[in-house]
Amino acid sequence: MAIPTAVNGQITDAVTQANVKVVGDAPAMAMGAIYQSLAHSTGILYENAVSAQQQIGICAQAATNQGVIQIYSIDTMAGAVSTAKIGQSDVPQTMLSLLTALKATQ
Image: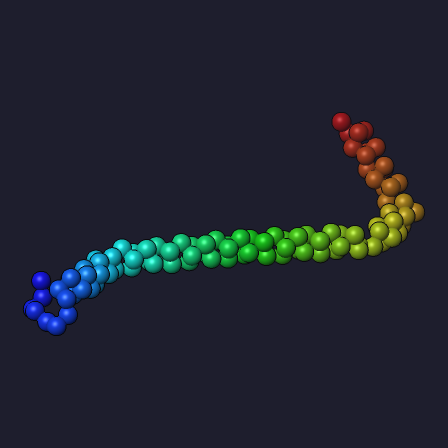
């Protein structure tokens, strides 16, 4: 017990015990705050990872869309015109002559 004072001894004991309890609980409270902060930070980390994955998915979808647009924008008439030109030229007849000559040599 403390040195005798004008205050009742039971009061000083109660205040002292309350102070000791606070000091005794401080490490556990500090660890609880640290764990809570760690859990919150980890949650934010996962939220950011999910957001980044969503953004990557959006970019991949946009790139695929642009690729399809590029494929569809190729002028199909250019292919048709070149095929018609080859059909009208003497290339098919020349190819047939070469094939006949090769078959004759076998």
